[in-house]
Amino acid sequence: EPEVTQTPSHQVTQMGQEVILRCVPISNHLYFYWYRQILGQKVEFLVSFYNNEISEKSEIFDDQFSVERPDGSNFTLKIRSTKLEDSAMYFCASSERVLEIAYEQYFGPGTRLTVT
Amino acid sequence: GQNIDQPTEMTATEGAIVQINCTYQTSGFNGLFWYQQHAGEAPTFLSYNVLDGLEEKGRFSSFLSRSKGYSYLLLKELQMKDSASYLCAVLDSNYQLIWGAGTKLIIKP
Image (cartoon, rainbow over all chains, first blue to last red; front, side, top):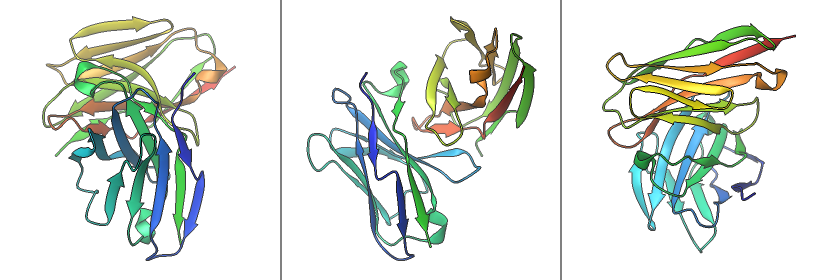
């Protein structure tokens, strides 16, 4: 069964450093998303991406964040200068069709980012 | 502001039925999702409702009343593996998924 994969599973970085989180969505999916979940808190939408551009982004997704689809398979989230409060689980998701026509999102296993 | 409320924790017995409620106040509504999340794992899709009424899928059913801003997830014939958090999420007018904090369901033998 096809699945979304994410690397690394756990990333530890120092405050102020740049990190790149990687995702490989399901191959025939066209819509990609990043979410984060701070430990013990709710899932929060960061950004959605379609046709090589951002479709929607939340208030959390400020200038420190960027996304890219550098090739036909990878989808990356970059945080330019990490802050302590960026410590969270970051989930990538993909879907075959956009949500308003009711297609489910498949989530990757997540990358746990720890900023020290 | 946008708000999704669901109980923090519920306990039920194996083999029984449990109903997890969700109320929402969001800027626009394009559907409501229920996801299951085991500790330390990613959310997995359970159901989607955009029209009023009940959607049944095996042991799980989901109900929506848009006029009341209310949904519930009904789990029947509970199994120990159903112990997880159940997340209610609403697709708002900007097509962003707004998530509730989740209901931790504890199943006892």
